[in-house]
Length: 340
Image 1: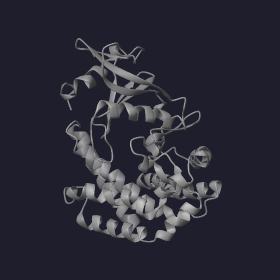
Image 2: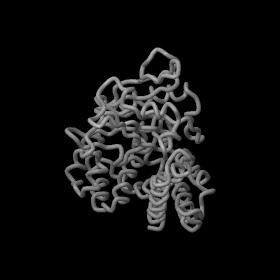
Image 3: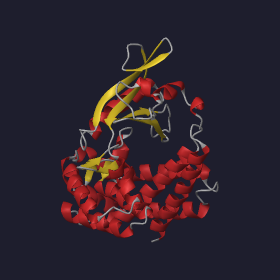
């Protein structure tokens, strides 16, 4: 998409001069879009601004809601990487001039973060064929104490019931029903995944066992390779801040997400190793029994996000095509978990 078709504030943030620090030698700012955010790569820092969207499960439709979610994003992500999440920033407008933290009218709120090394991003290690068991060992060593310290108890237990999990799982099917037969999701896949999910959810005792074991926690909610950096230390960032029910839940949902992601990248052996290693380190003997269900759920969610991103008029044709292709792969993966 041409930069001239982007919102005016986005065009302003694509210019190096708006930042109070050096950007990079060629004075270009990188822009990455998701279905809910504009992310600006500006020198040694990253700035993230939320799109004014409302998907029902996520509502950034007005400025105050975006401010509150930015504040929540800072608070929650500092649990795992306080060094990365620096501050809340404002974008102001004064006589047609956009400024970061200026004195004019506040038109947007964003988050300022330290930019992590690209070569150490887990997704790039995977692309380079360099991800090893030792990396997963380091990650497990970071995650086990995180979950042990995370909020849990009776106040969160209700989010682990079959009924509560079912709300998250089943709403995905309603949100994607209109996309069936349009290139990424076929009716047979949809029906197979729905039947499997409903069958597991009908076994309420399985979910009660997880509640009784104390495994329902205030988790990360978006634990996969795109949100992990394996640099001088392990950084796990960009957790779910916009809807507590996507973050409150079984630890197995987080670990299942990352295991699914490794499967997606063709790393089935490392996927199995992750589950086994986390189970041993955390003492969670029942983890493996829940993983396939959550792998299926998470693969479907990633497919849904691909559909939503492809449907966004703000993304260009190449991004749209890539999103549809990846969505099709995720739905196929979800079908595989359901059939297995």
